Amino acid sequence: MAGGKLSPRQKMINLMYLIFIAMLAMQMDKKVLSSFGFMKEKIEDANVASSTNIDNILSSLNTKATDQPDKFADLNTKAQEINKLSEDLFVYMSALKDSILSDTDEEDKTNYESMSNGDRLDELFFKGEGLTEQGEEFIGSINSYRNNLLSILGTDANPDLLRNIKKRFNTDSVPSIDEGSPKIPWIKSRYEGMPMITSLANMTQIQGDVKNTEAEIYTNLLGGQLETEVSLTNYKGIVALEKTAYFAGERVEGKVVLGRYDATLVPTEVILNGRDATDKVKDGQVMVDIPAGNVGTNNIKGTITFMQDGEPVPVSFESKYSVIALPSEAVISADKMNVVYRGLDNPISISVPGVGDKDITSSVPGNNKLKRTGLGKYILNPGSGKEVKINVSAKLSNGKIINTPKTFRIKDIPAAAGTVRSDFGIVPMPKSSLNNVPIGAALPDFVFDLQLIVKGFTIKVPGQLAVKVTGDKLDSRAKKALAKARRGDLVTIFDIQAFEKLKGTRIKKVLPVSISITN
Image (cartoon, rainbow, N blue to C red; front, top):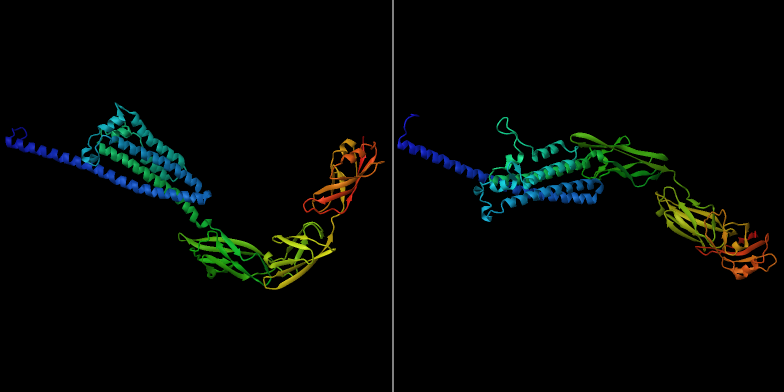
């Protein structure tokens, strides 16, 4: 039969079979081209959804970086770098696809069965056995994206994430179908001689890989941060008492809370000072109500146990408080010494152990003035007389009122000493120098650091009449008298009028200063 002649009828039947098979092949090619087009559309739709999700992640991360820079600033910076790389590659692929379709009519851009010709892309990418400039740029863009991502993430990143990035953006040459033949460059195996629609679909898939990779990186990075944030090992037990000092017989009141103040966390067990206090939990806080204990330092400590991943996680807490004996009077002390000075702002501290400043009141009688300047701090300006009595009233936590008077002696500012060049007593000096130096006054070893100014004095040169001077330097009359002084003469500055600079209080007595003329 095989070697025999075929009848005309048999030849016609064979020809019809061949035509039928060719028609089936042509129809199958068109369906394959359409499938690539529909796949491209699906990927593009997924890319739009991914872009929206990525934008939301970046916006949320940027807000967190603003609110908590210590925790999220570095993470946000890394995410912005990754987003910039991803956007650059995505936009590059979009521009490349537009370039390939530039000669295609608008209505034909969705007619995928007509996109069987790959000449446009071959001209764009390939030149002889090598690549065009656009072809080199295409493969370089993918390699650069992959390498930059790996550099930003570092070698300590999630191994699965690094493996996915290397696999998705791998451009290594692929083995040839013929055994023993050289490997085929990746870009030639994927794009050379391929229908236009398959190349467009491949480029769209690269865009999809970019979006999927970007979202995977953010999820991985944020997931690690979130795991750290919510881990119970980062919680800290805090003892918050109503006050830190208690009188003997009082009850210690307050609460133990977690550092995150999360009312939704319910502990399975609470141990407070060795006793079960699980029934004292309210809104995520352990309410404390125990006897104060003995006078001295006392501890509050224990554990709050939670369940995490089916395992108990204990969170410890510890604090100290002081118990003091019930006072019978206020404690009052002068900051400088047990004396107050007339004409000066005398700092006074007034406190009562165990009593808050708001429950303490103080007063002075007569023309004395007492002014509060801070917590337990006052300024006393004594008036006339030799003594001033400060009356202190304090309300204790048990409601009892105690009244305590305290008497201070009042003294005038002590005598100052006249000075020349900050020296006092007998100061050796040439006449020419004395002509120009100011006369001063000081209070050596006084408890207050006062600044004194001189507004007048009298100068006596041996053999000359005393001269009164206004101000702190010699005037023309005084200089004329000083000109007649001889070497070895003792010139005396007395009747010095000195005043305290800030309040203008006059110093009642200023000791004279003498100048021994040297030439």
